[in-house]
Image 1: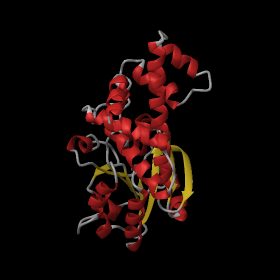
Image 2 (image 1 turned 45 degrees about the vertical axis):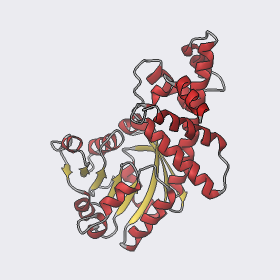
Image 3 (image 1 turned 135 degrees about the horizontal axis):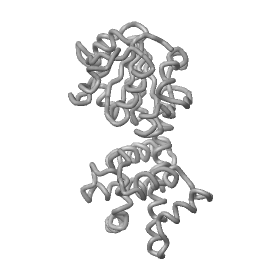
Image 4 (image 1 turned 180 degrees about the horizontal axis):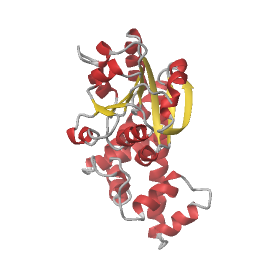
Length: 298
């Protein structure tokens, strides 16, 4: 395990778990978040320093961005006190966002001009995986930089996939999320049909989980976050819509046809039109029929 400092920018549902697992592994850590309560939670931890991104770039061998998307990273990169201006030689930046691969390649090019290796690393595993240190990472960019720093990922991920050139990781993440969210909504649709037929939702899920319709949605999301009545999947409807919009747009640029992805995007747009932008997405099941009715009007 490298003992050089690592920086984590973004300490929310995903970044908080990532930072805690690095700290537990004894990695000298620098952390930052725009929200004071998030960064204050780390101030008393041994071996952890709260510092802004530019300061991190000067002191760390690697940085991990766990922020909403590329614009938040660009804001940290720019300016006389930003990452580009202050980066130490050989800095490796991991971008854990779900972002447009075109924007990813553009920022990677800017980083390379300043001697920074910029790797896009799409995540799977959600907040639960971040807390447990069991994320799956889909990585694109400089392979040598990845191999040089892959040991720092050990406390936070148990499956690493190097995919190729810059943007590859974010492209596969968009595809992954498009498929994942489409399967979730299909499972919701099946659940509503089962209930209309007088079949208990739990019974449908139990059957799915020992039959061919099983999925992450049936094995994890429904039992833990819907059947439990907790409604706590820990991601907003907005996040799903953002993912689907980017995936559909990327498909269009590639000339790929994604009609099911388009239907999923339209459903999520209708959910947001109903005021669900900041609602935990598990509650899409709760309002499924009403959202479908809204989609039908458009």
